[in-house]
Length: 291
Image 1 (cartoon, rainbow, N blue to C red):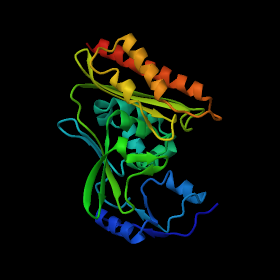
Image 2 (tube, rainbow, N blue to C red):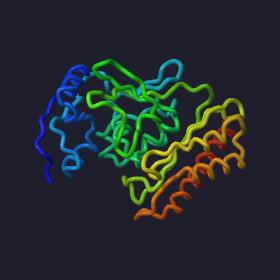
Image 3 (tube, rainbow, N blue to C red):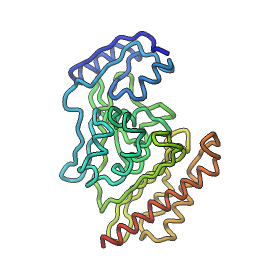
């Protein structure tokens, strides 16, 4: 099926793009990677009157770490840029573990990190990692910029808090106060498929104790699940086998999956539990070897 007719605009500045979105009055959409939007348009699940292509706006394709460890990802940074990034591998173990598991090579070569988070797919991998890392999205509109915590950014499946004339221009991961560890595991029926279930974990350790923890769950709820009780159960104590088992149980309880062609709800909860144990056990092993 072909998409409905639409106008195409290619602004050269963020301000010009915002003006076009304002002119569109809710009927315009941003085009960055297009890996989600274009298929939806071809199926006519989305029929915007205007596409505002931001790919010709300079200085949006970047990822970098500040001196204090704060990590920035620009709106045109592709999945493949992060997959191949030595900077990401050095500073962001949770994101580095997630990058090669996003969709397939074709999508990774064109799709964007920020666009994926904005798409708010409950089965999206990056959103879980951002939840675990307590990440933020920077949006710019006619009234200037605002920073939104990812835990408040997604309001439901395929819904976020952006106004119709705002652009998400950057993702930010806050600096760590300890040594950062993390991981991401995803069960999929075949390479490139949506997640049956996925788990992102981000920890900060000082000595033997966990001083911050985050756990995000993919594909087991109507939106990305923030397993706060599971994460908080780890804080303030060493990463013992008992602590790992307790966190895994709480993460499984936080999952709210539905039974479908990918598996039963009980099966998906068990996958979540197993993945939490695997990630935390691997972190514990890595930490011990580095000590």
